[in-house]
Image (cartoon, rainbow, N blue to C red; front, side, top):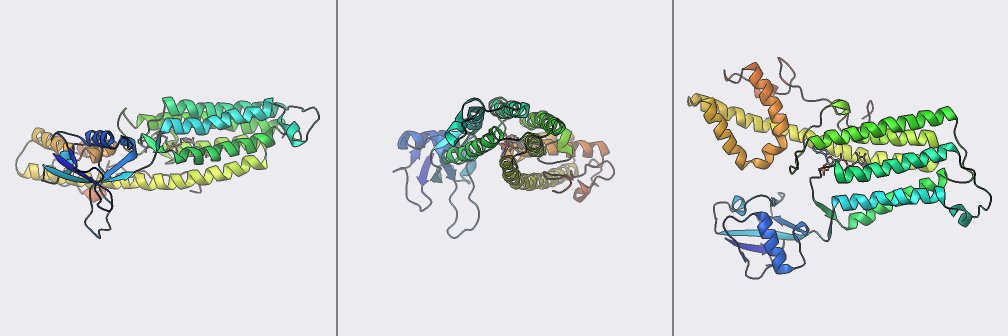
Length: 382
Ligand SMILES: NC(=O)c1ccc[n+]([C@@H]2O[C@H](COP(=O)([O-])OP(=O)(O)OC[C@H]3O[C@@H](n4cnc5c(N)ncnc54)[C@H](OP(=O)(O)O)[C@@H]3O)[C@@H](O)[C@H]2O)c1
């Protein structure tokens, strides 16, 4: 198969194109581009199908696991792809490791070392218990996040632009230093014992809950798959982004106990960032469900046709499996929701009698599932 690689302006990136086996995958093509260009390793490459001139549609992005044949549109001998350089990339665990390492190191510097002498405070520094507990809470939080990055999260994207390392480190490292400076300050005034206990108590409970939320998110993806599903169980039955909710409340607990303006500024900034992300995630999950309904419609009409043709269930399952192979990405993304739908539909046995109304798929009536109504991030406000 001959593959022509062009830029978005139509200029050929690899002179003469590339000759690849008919069975080649997109990953093989990316490797071949890397071999020829040396500079553009696979995760730096974004390959799309060319658009018609003047088209306003979003281009189709080639998935590295798919066969090139899937994109040839009947013309199996030739394929033209549009190449975009995404710039230097860094893996997600490395990105997160560097952004969390900063606060983990910077905070104890303010607690243990005589840094305040450089700010003009020469006297003896009294360390209150709340400052020591705050150090433990802070370090545990960032240590936990590094551990989760390497051992819990299953990221859908392998890499992120290198520039994000600098942006994210600036955010976490600066806030780390800002909060550490005030909480460990020689003129720091501690809160009451009761307030400290309530604050740290809330923070500990939220840390545990946040960890459990991350385990539930991890379980949504088998190793290797990267789709999105509606999280279920524990706080996810109430809030779409329960991991962000618990993160926000853990910082609220920390601030109740330590009570600094710096800490509350961080809480407001972090909460607004997470709220924006949560709104986007909530929208995406709702779309996922809509897509699942569309897929279900296709599935149901397919079954109806088969039934009209007098074909049996086994043939139906075989043909469905075949269609799954062609829409693999869609099906894996919605497998969980689909299985829910299929389960309840099969239970009601109405599918066999062909009188199911797909518009009522998520109406919650007569044993049918109800579309989960959830808060986005901060019940009872949002
Ligand atoms: N203090 C702050 O400013 C701040 C800001 C943000 C986050 N955080 C903390 O850091 C933690 C991780 O942040 P994050 O933004 O990476 O969290 P996240 O997007 O909610 O995801 C955590 C992991 O779960 C996966 N995931 C999320 N929703 C999923 C779904 N519906 N189906 C399948 N997998 C799903 C994500 O995959 P993908 O790779 O596809 O995303 C990621 O691997 C948060 O929970 C929070 O505790 C703190």
